[in-house]
Length: 146
Image (cartoon, rainbow, N blue to C red; front, side, top):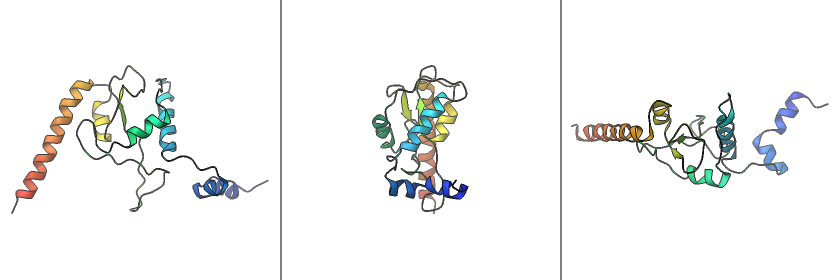
């Protein structure tokens, strides 16, 4: 019987690469998003394929406020600064419907939390524009300061 450390060591990413079991880039985020859609009796329909999810990952700005999206690293782990980034950054336009390409947009964590189940898609577009304008005004004020 293998020791626990030997078993855990086999599950590391570098060992999966050596043995030919490496996952595709972004697959762990795709799987965690798919799991999150169905956990805790949520039972949201997950209608996004891996290839469609990759098109969402290509989007680098928030649909609502235009802020940068800090997507996790393709294979997980920590970035160069040692920070672990997580999250799938998909927001459903209509929270009564499941996850589909037509019902999802890429959103930063702040906008996703702000919208929650309380705001409609149209209301969040207005709030996102206000956030974008406020951020741009703050940048303009700091560049004009002497």
